[in-house]
Image (cartoon, rainbow, N blue to C red; front, side, top):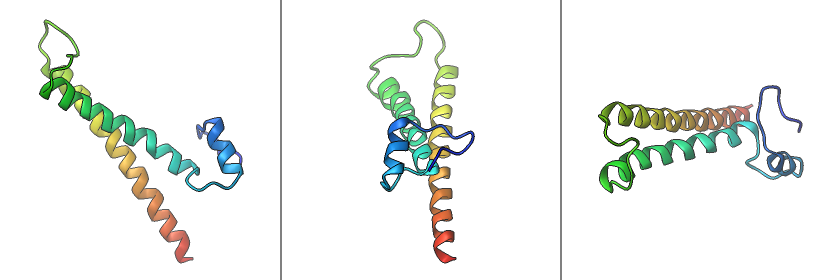
Length: 98
């Protein structure tokens, strides 16, 4: 299946899709980077920065604004991935009912 207009797909995903491998449809592929990036960003911001104090975003400045932006951006990415996952599953369920 050729990529849909406006859909970003990697070459390996197109190859897998052409050979009929499951899990390579556009909405299925687009949710994983959001879930992964959001999960990593929240883990990094909360565990690495605050609990373990592995590194800080900036040194010598008030960190609260940076922490808020970093963690909210991670939560937004994570929620976007969950929303796409929910949407894809509801579409699959609706298509099966027809």
